[in-house]
Length: 364
Image 1 (cartoon, rainbow, N blue to C red):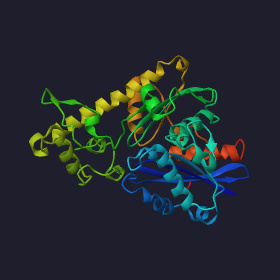
Image 2: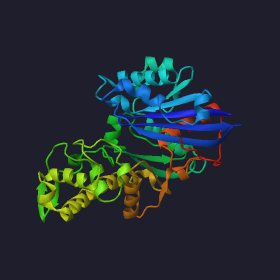
Image 3: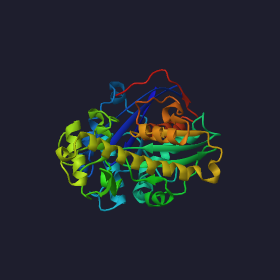
Image 4: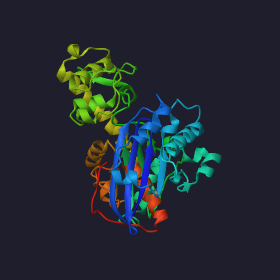
Protein backbone atom coordinates (compact mmCIF):
# COMPACT_ATOMS: atom_id res chain seq x y z
CA UNK A 1 0.00 0.00 0.00
CA UNK A 2 1.24 3.48 -0.85
CA UNK A 3 0.02 7.05 -0.52
CA UNK A 4 0.41 9.97 -2.86
CA UNK A 5 -0.31 13.56 -1.89
CA UNK A 6 -1.51 16.25 -4.29
CA UNK A 7 -0.98 19.91 -3.39
CA UNK A 8 -2.61 22.88 -5.10
CA UNK A 9 -1.24 26.04 -3.52
CA UNK A 10 -2.93 29.29 -4.46
CA UNK A 11 -2.78 32.81 -3.17
CA UNK A 12 -5.96 32.43 -1.13
CA UNK A 13 -6.60 28.69 -0.88
CA UNK A 14 -4.28 25.80 -0.09
CA UNK A 15 -5.69 22.43 -1.10
CA UNK A 16 -4.47 18.95 -0.24
CA UNK A 17 -5.61 15.58 -1.54
CA UNK A 18 -4.28 12.11 -0.88
CA UNK A 19 -4.69 8.91 -2.88
CA UNK A 20 -4.29 5.43 -1.45
CA UNK A 21 -2.82 2.96 -3.94
CA UNK A 22 -3.00 -0.77 -3.28
CA UNK A 23 -1.85 -3.33 -5.83
CA UNK A 24 -1.89 -0.81 -8.64
CA UNK A 25 -5.45 0.21 -7.84
CA UNK A 26 -6.86 3.42 -6.39
CA UNK A 27 -8.64 2.28 -3.23
CA UNK A 28 -9.21 5.53 -1.37
CA UNK A 29 -9.01 9.28 -1.60
CA UNK A 30 -9.56 12.25 0.66
CA UNK A 31 -8.88 15.92 0.74
CA UNK A 32 -9.45 19.31 2.23
CA UNK A 33 -8.97 23.01 1.60
CA UNK A 34 -7.82 25.80 3.90
CA UNK A 35 -8.27 29.51 3.28
CA UNK A 36 -4.85 31.10 3.73
CA UNK A 37 -3.83 34.53 2.49
CA UNK A 38 -0.38 33.70 1.21
CA UNK A 39 0.40 37.28 0.24
CA UNK A 40 0.11 38.43 3.86
CA UNK A 41 2.58 35.91 5.29
CA UNK A 42 4.38 33.67 2.79
CA UNK A 43 6.60 32.36 5.58
CA UNK A 44 3.55 30.84 7.28
CA UNK A 45 2.77 28.43 4.43
CA UNK A 46 4.89 25.67 5.95
CA UNK A 47 2.85 25.67 9.14
CA UNK A 48 -0.38 25.52 7.12
CA UNK A 49 0.92 22.43 5.31
CA UNK A 50 2.16 20.74 8.47
CA UNK A 51 -1.12 21.40 10.27
CA UNK A 52 -3.32 19.93 7.53
CA UNK A 53 -5.68 17.32 9.03
CA UNK A 54 -4.42 14.31 7.10
CA UNK A 55 -5.54 10.89 8.37
CA UNK A 56 -3.14 9.17 10.76
CA UNK A 57 -2.19 6.47 8.25
CA UNK A 58 -1.05 9.07 5.72
CA UNK A 59 0.90 10.97 8.36
CA UNK A 60 2.54 7.91 9.88
CA UNK A 61 3.59 6.30 6.61
CA UNK A 62 5.90 8.36 4.48
CA UNK A 63 4.08 9.18 1.21
CA UNK A 64 5.54 7.71 -1.96
CA UNK A 65 5.49 11.12 -3.57
CA UNK A 66 4.04 14.61 -3.59
CA UNK A 67 2.51 16.09 -6.74
CA UNK A 68 2.75 19.88 -6.54
CA UNK A 69 0.94 22.50 -8.56
CA UNK A 70 0.45 26.17 -7.78
CA UNK A 71 -0.89 29.59 -8.64
CA UNK A 72 0.26 31.42 -5.52
CA UNK A 73 3.49 32.56 -7.14
CA UNK A 74 1.60 35.56 -8.56
CA UNK A 75 1.06 37.03 -5.06
CA UNK A 76 2.53 40.50 -4.79
CA UNK A 77 4.59 39.51 -1.75
CA UNK A 78 6.97 38.02 -4.31
CA UNK A 79 9.01 40.26 -6.60
CA UNK A 80 8.71 37.75 -9.47
CA UNK A 81 6.90 34.55 -10.37
CA UNK A 82 10.21 32.68 -10.22
CA UNK A 83 10.78 33.82 -6.64
CA UNK A 84 7.25 32.77 -5.74
CA UNK A 85 7.59 29.32 -7.30
CA UNK A 86 10.84 28.62 -5.45
CA UNK A 87 9.46 29.94 -2.15
CA UNK A 88 6.39 27.71 -2.40
CA UNK A 89 8.51 24.70 -3.32
CA UNK A 90 10.83 25.37 -0.38
CA UNK A 91 7.86 25.45 2.02
CA UNK A 92 6.64 22.10 0.68
CA UNK A 93 10.10 20.54 0.87
CA UNK A 94 10.55 21.71 4.47
CA UNK A 95 7.12 20.39 5.44
CA UNK A 96 7.60 16.95 3.88
CA UNK A 97 11.28 16.06 4.34
CA UNK A 98 12.60 12.96 2.57
CA UNK A 99 9.48 12.71 0.38
CA UNK A 100 10.05 12.96 -3.40
CA UNK A 101 8.40 16.09 -4.84
CA UNK A 102 7.18 16.13 -8.44
CA UNK A 103 6.28 19.61 -9.65
CA UNK A 104 3.69 19.98 -12.41
CA UNK A 105 4.38 22.41 -15.25
CA UNK A 106 2.57 24.24 -18.03
CA UNK A 107 4.30 21.85 -20.43
CA UNK A 108 2.08 19.04 -19.15
CA UNK A 109 4.80 17.11 -17.33
CA UNK A 110 6.37 16.70 -13.92
CA UNK A 111 9.88 17.96 -13.28
CA UNK A 112 12.51 17.25 -10.64
CA UNK A 113 13.66 19.76 -8.01
CA UNK A 114 16.84 20.29 -10.02
CA UNK A 115 14.89 21.15 -13.17
CA UNK A 116 12.63 23.44 -11.17
CA UNK A 117 15.60 25.35 -9.78
CA UNK A 118 16.97 26.02 -13.26
CA UNK A 119 13.59 26.90 -14.84
CA UNK A 120 11.06 27.85 -12.15
CA UNK A 121 8.80 29.76 -14.54
CA UNK A 122 7.43 26.59 -16.12
CA UNK A 123 5.70 25.68 -12.84
CA UNK A 124 3.85 28.99 -12.57
CA UNK A 125 0.04 28.83 -12.77
CA UNK A 126 -0.12 25.25 -14.03
CA UNK A 127 -3.00 23.82 -11.99
CA UNK A 128 -5.56 24.42 -14.77
CA UNK A 129 -3.63 22.02 -17.01
CA UNK A 130 -3.50 19.33 -14.34
CA UNK A 131 -7.28 19.43 -13.95
CA UNK A 132 -7.99 19.55 -17.67
CA UNK A 133 -5.49 16.85 -18.67
CA UNK A 134 -6.65 14.47 -15.96
CA UNK A 135 -10.19 14.83 -17.27
CA UNK A 136 -9.14 14.46 -20.90
CA UNK A 137 -7.24 11.26 -20.09
CA UNK A 138 -9.86 9.73 -17.82
CA UNK A 139 -11.22 6.45 -19.23
CA UNK A 140 -14.76 7.74 -19.75
CA UNK A 141 -13.65 10.78 -21.75
CA UNK A 142 -10.61 9.81 -23.81
CA UNK A 143 -12.45 9.76 -27.15
CA UNK A 144 -15.06 12.43 -26.43
CA UNK A 145 -15.03 16.20 -26.85
CA UNK A 146 -15.93 18.40 -23.91
CA UNK A 147 -15.86 21.92 -22.57
CA UNK A 148 -14.54 22.12 -19.03
CA UNK A 149 -15.17 25.08 -16.71
CA UNK A 150 -13.73 25.51 -13.23
CA UNK A 151 -15.01 28.51 -11.26
CA UNK A 152 -13.21 29.19 -8.02
CA UNK A 153 -13.15 31.97 -5.48
CA UNK A 154 -11.24 34.34 -7.76
CA UNK A 155 -10.98 33.08 -11.34
CA UNK A 156 -12.72 30.91 -13.92
CA UNK A 157 -10.97 28.52 -16.31
CA UNK A 158 -12.72 27.43 -19.50
CA UNK A 159 -10.97 24.81 -21.63
CA UNK A 160 -11.66 22.61 -24.62
CA UNK A 161 -10.93 18.88 -24.45
CA UNK A 162 -10.94 16.35 -27.28
CA UNK A 163 -9.41 12.93 -28.06
CA UNK A 164 -7.53 12.76 -24.77
CA UNK A 165 -5.92 16.17 -25.23
CA UNK A 166 -6.32 19.67 -23.82
CA UNK A 167 -6.82 22.02 -26.77
CA UNK A 168 -5.40 25.07 -25.02
CA UNK A 169 -4.39 28.03 -27.15
CA UNK A 170 -2.68 29.79 -24.26
CA UNK A 171 -0.07 28.58 -21.81
CA UNK A 172 0.79 31.47 -19.50
CA UNK A 173 -1.91 33.35 -17.63
CA UNK A 174 -1.44 36.35 -19.92
CA UNK A 175 -1.90 34.18 -23.02
CA UNK A 176 -4.93 32.53 -21.44
CA UNK A 177 -6.50 35.91 -20.69
CA UNK A 178 -6.06 36.75 -24.37
CA UNK A 179 -7.63 33.47 -25.54
CA UNK A 180 -10.55 33.56 -23.11
CA UNK A 181 -9.35 30.42 -21.36
CA UNK A 182 -8.92 32.40 -18.15
CA UNK A 183 -11.54 34.85 -16.91
CA UNK A 184 -10.69 36.85 -13.82
CA UNK A 185 -14.03 36.49 -12.11
CA UNK A 186 -14.84 34.25 -9.17
CA UNK A 187 -17.61 33.39 -6.78
CA UNK A 188 -16.16 34.82 -3.56
CA UNK A 189 -13.12 37.13 -3.67
CA UNK A 190 -13.88 39.10 -6.82
CA UNK A 191 -14.57 42.75 -6.08
CA UNK A 192 -18.08 43.62 -7.26
CA UNK A 193 -16.89 46.74 -9.08
CA UNK A 194 -14.79 44.41 -11.28
CA UNK A 195 -18.01 42.69 -12.40
CA UNK A 196 -20.19 45.75 -13.02
CA UNK A 197 -19.45 49.34 -13.97
CA UNK A 198 -23.07 50.39 -13.55
CA UNK A 199 -26.26 48.90 -12.15
CA UNK A 200 -30.00 49.51 -12.34
CA UNK A 201 -31.37 51.37 -9.33
CA UNK A 202 -34.99 52.50 -9.14
CA UNK A 203 -35.34 52.31 -12.92
CA UNK A 204 -32.22 54.35 -13.57
CA UNK A 205 -28.65 53.56 -14.55
CA UNK A 206 -26.30 54.18 -11.63
CA UNK A 207 -22.51 54.15 -11.87
CA UNK A 208 -20.79 52.19 -9.12
CA UNK A 209 -18.09 53.31 -6.70
CA UNK A 210 -14.76 51.84 -7.74
CA UNK A 211 -13.68 51.00 -4.22
CA UNK A 212 -13.03 47.75 -2.41
CA UNK A 213 -16.35 47.93 -0.59
CA UNK A 214 -17.93 44.57 -1.40
CA UNK A 215 -17.14 41.20 -2.99
CA UNK A 216 -19.12 38.55 -4.85
CA UNK A 217 -19.39 36.50 -1.66
CA UNK A 218 -21.69 39.25 -0.34
CA UNK A 219 -23.86 38.98 -3.45
CA UNK A 220 -24.10 35.20 -3.28
CA UNK A 221 -24.72 35.23 0.46
CA UNK A 222 -27.64 37.65 0.05
CA UNK A 223 -29.12 35.54 -2.75
CA UNK A 224 -28.88 32.35 -0.70
CA UNK A 225 -26.37 30.75 -3.06
CA UNK A 226 -23.84 30.19 -0.28
CA UNK A 227 -24.16 29.66 3.46
CA UNK A 228 -22.18 31.67 5.99
CA UNK A 229 -19.79 28.72 6.37
CA UNK A 230 -19.08 28.87 2.62
CA UNK A 231 -18.01 32.52 2.90
CA UNK A 232 -14.42 31.43 3.49
CA UNK A 233 -12.65 34.59 2.35
CA UNK A 234 -11.94 37.76 4.30
CA UNK A 235 -14.58 40.48 4.18
CA UNK A 236 -13.55 43.87 2.74
CA UNK A 237 -14.34 45.73 5.96
CA UNK A 238 -13.32 43.02 8.41
CA UNK A 239 -16.98 42.72 9.43
CA UNK A 240 -19.37 39.82 9.71
CA UNK A 241 -20.60 37.38 7.08
CA UNK A 242 -24.26 37.45 8.09
CA UNK A 243 -26.84 38.78 5.65
CA UNK A 244 -27.10 42.14 7.39
CA UNK A 245 -23.36 42.74 7.11
CA UNK A 246 -23.37 41.65 3.46
CA UNK A 247 -26.23 44.06 2.71
CA UNK A 248 -24.38 46.91 4.39
CA UNK A 249 -21.29 46.32 2.26
CA UNK A 250 -23.25 45.92 -0.97
CA UNK A 251 -25.12 49.20 -0.40
CA UNK A 252 -21.79 51.01 -0.38
CA UNK A 253 -21.32 49.98 -4.02
CA UNK A 254 -23.69 52.82 -4.87
CA UNK A 255 -22.42 55.07 -2.05
CA UNK A 256 -25.46 54.33 0.09
CA UNK A 257 -26.29 52.81 3.42
CA UNK A 258 -28.49 49.75 3.73
CA UNK A 259 -31.23 51.74 5.44
CA UNK A 260 -31.37 54.19 2.53
CA UNK A 261 -32.00 51.47 -0.04
CA UNK A 262 -34.04 48.95 1.91
CA UNK A 263 -33.83 45.15 1.82
CA UNK A 264 -35.81 44.67 -1.41
CA UNK A 265 -33.70 47.16 -3.37
CA UNK A 266 -30.47 45.58 -2.15
CA UNK A 267 -31.67 42.12 -3.19
CA UNK A 268 -32.60 43.46 -6.63
CA UNK A 269 -29.14 45.00 -6.82
CA UNK A 270 -27.59 41.62 -5.97
CA UNK A 271 -29.68 39.93 -8.69
CA UNK A 272 -28.51 42.49 -11.25
CA UNK A 273 -24.87 41.87 -10.35
CA UNK A 274 -25.26 38.11 -10.45
CA UNK A 275 -26.80 38.31 -13.92
CA UNK A 276 -23.85 40.39 -15.15
CA UNK A 277 -21.35 37.83 -13.88
CA UNK A 278 -23.42 34.98 -15.28
CA UNK A 279 -23.37 36.66 -18.68
CA UNK A 280 -19.59 37.01 -18.55
CA UNK A 281 -19.24 33.29 -17.93
CA UNK A 282 -21.81 32.38 -20.60
CA UNK A 283 -19.95 34.54 -23.12
CA UNK A 284 -16.79 32.58 -22.35
CA UNK A 285 -18.62 29.28 -22.77
CA UNK A 286 -20.08 30.34 -26.12
CA UNK A 287 -16.67 31.51 -27.28
CA UNK A 288 -15.31 28.01 -26.70
CA UNK A 289 -18.33 26.34 -28.25
CA UNK A 290 -17.65 28.30 -31.45
CA UNK A 291 -14.28 26.62 -31.97
CA UNK A 292 -14.21 24.28 -34.94
CA UNK A 293 -12.89 21.35 -32.94
CA UNK A 294 -15.84 21.55 -30.52
CA UNK A 295 -18.65 20.93 -33.01
CA UNK A 296 -19.24 17.46 -31.58
CA UNK A 297 -18.90 18.32 -27.90
CA UNK A 298 -20.90 15.90 -25.74
CA UNK A 299 -20.03 17.15 -22.28
CA UNK A 300 -19.96 20.36 -20.30
CA UNK A 301 -17.93 19.49 -17.21
CA UNK A 302 -17.94 21.73 -14.15
CA UNK A 303 -15.77 22.14 -11.07
CA UNK A 304 -15.06 24.60 -8.29
CA UNK A 305 -16.91 26.60 -5.67
CA UNK A 306 -18.89 28.31 -8.40
CA UNK A 307 -20.29 25.09 -9.85
CA UNK A 308 -23.81 26.27 -8.99
CA UNK A 309 -23.40 29.30 -11.26
CA UNK A 310 -21.88 27.18 -14.03
CA UNK A 311 -24.86 24.84 -13.78
CA UNK A 312 -27.23 27.79 -14.18
CA UNK A 313 -25.24 28.97 -17.20
CA UNK A 314 -25.51 25.52 -18.75
CA UNK A 315 -29.27 25.45 -18.20
CA UNK A 316 -29.64 28.86 -19.84
CA UNK A 317 -27.73 27.61 -22.89
CA UNK A 318 -29.46 24.24 -23.00
CA UNK A 319 -26.25 22.35 -22.27
CA UNK A 320 -26.10 19.18 -20.21
CA UNK A 321 -23.84 19.73 -17.19
CA UNK A 322 -21.75 16.99 -15.57
CA UNK A 323 -19.71 17.47 -12.36
CA UNK A 324 -16.02 16.61 -12.74
CA UNK A 325 -16.10 13.92 -10.05
CA UNK A 326 -18.55 11.86 -12.10
CA UNK A 327 -15.90 11.65 -14.83
CA UNK A 328 -12.71 11.05 -12.85
CA UNK A 329 -12.10 7.51 -11.51
CA UNK A 330 -12.40 7.23 -7.75
CA UNK A 331 -13.29 10.89 -7.20
CA UNK A 332 -16.06 12.36 -5.09
CA UNK A 333 -17.82 15.71 -4.63
CA UNK A 334 -15.90 16.50 -1.45
CA UNK A 335 -12.46 16.48 -3.08
CA UNK A 336 -10.52 19.57 -4.26
CA UNK A 337 -10.19 18.98 -7.97
CA UNK A 338 -6.76 20.31 -8.95
CA UNK A 339 -5.09 18.64 -5.96
CA UNK A 340 -6.83 15.38 -6.84
CA UNK A 341 -6.01 15.71 -10.53
CA UNK A 342 -2.30 16.34 -10.05
CA UNK A 343 -2.05 13.40 -7.63
CA UNK A 344 -3.92 11.19 -10.13
CA UNK A 345 -1.55 12.22 -12.93
CA UNK A 346 1.42 11.33 -10.74
CA UNK A 347 -0.17 7.97 -9.95
CA UNK A 348 -0.54 7.34 -13.68
CA UNK A 349 3.16 8.04 -14.10
CA UNK A 350 4.38 5.97 -11.16
CA UNK A 351 1.95 3.05 -11.43
CA UNK A 352 1.28 2.97 -15.18
CA UNK A 353 -2.44 2.83 -16.06
CA UNK A 354 -3.96 3.05 -12.62
CA UNK A 355 -7.26 1.30 -12.04
CA UNK A 356 -9.80 3.45 -10.22
CA UNK A 357 -12.10 2.14 -7.54
CA UNK A 358 -14.68 3.82 -5.38
CA UNK A 359 -14.48 1.44 -2.44
CA UNK A 360 -14.28 4.30 0.04
CA UNK A 361 -13.77 8.03 0.15
CA UNK A 362 -12.20 9.46 3.27
CA UNK A 363 -12.24 13.14 4.07
CA UNK A 364 -9.37 14.39 6.15
